[in-house]
Image (cartoon, rainbow over all chains, first blue to last red; front, side, top):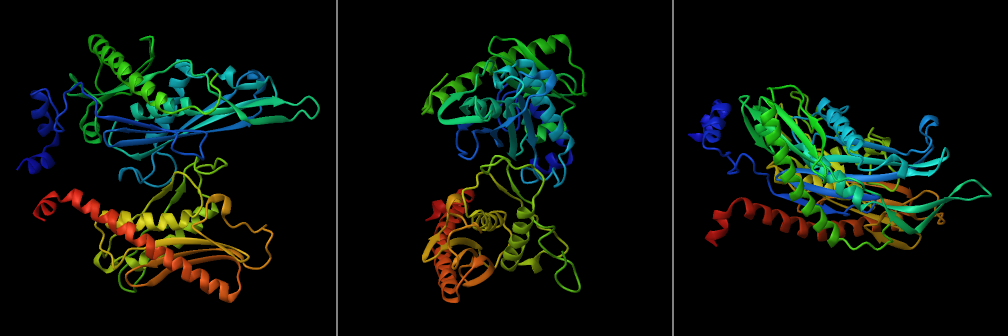
Length: 280
Length: 194
């Protein structure tokens, strides 16, 4: 009976739960799904992390390469994030060029990196005007069940913290780069932003960490990114129902609490990985 | 992709088989390379005989494989992986497909080579330098796919195929265990009965 009602009137079905301030999966409106984090599992990548937010699974792999800095930014390296939503993560994605959602997610991640200054591009410069690091961050969604952006940000942060860059020096005689694989340093991660996404129902009710089903029923979405100093790094509100200033304040407060939860998880996981190389 | 003359049925378009950009030593771009297209074709040919396609007329079964980390024998692993996923999905099959690969270097045969041990044309050995991947239907004991690269002597080649078949049979018991566990997880009432 309930299953039939759910299929015919999904929004009404949801409203019945929201009236009791809960959701069909038993969560409260402000409750996140269980977050699991695993780092360093992909040895071919220079840094990697796997995040599970409920069923949503995102793996982030970092590859670093050499590049020449541009003329107008001769002391800066590059960070290239990319989000991929392959057809295997959900039947809503078809094979072919990156979907709009994937492109929008990639741009969002790029903006967060820029605004929060997770890594300063100057740190990626090896020799001004000649050599710099380019950090490719590829996030692949393996299972899509909503809230892609939050999972991607956690995966990106954890993977970046997992990266070990070998020491590079430019030899005087040949002018070529000499890589010392025995001496590795971690990337200088300056800020630790954490994203919190909300789905807006009927213009008034905000629920945190929406599943894929909740995302399709929602009338709007909002994502808030906070760093460890409780400062706002990004607010992503792509269309949909309006967001009043009081509601925005509530969301920011929730995002700040979430930041502490994720930061705790991240520090625990980083502690459990024993660094075998020098830490800068 | 049409099979019979009257109605079109098949495994669908060539299985996009992706290598994630961070899966190999050198970062690969997202655009499908020739290797991926070749592997997709081989996989489609190897998986098709195992599936009861006649039970799915006018339907398309799409299988997507993504390699997260490449440390050799990816085709063999992908074949096994895809057939387990098909079984998990409840697609009716005649038999599982298990893949196994072997690297021959002179007199030395290496079963399940790692990335460092994989075949490369520029190797020191002139004769008997090659790699072999076999896709086997274990219960029916039939080979649904075979890829051989390099130069082989007839006898060595036959022995290598036999070694791969043995490897597949050993792997099949692990596959069975995995599927049994998965079924037990999904149907707890059956488990509590015995």
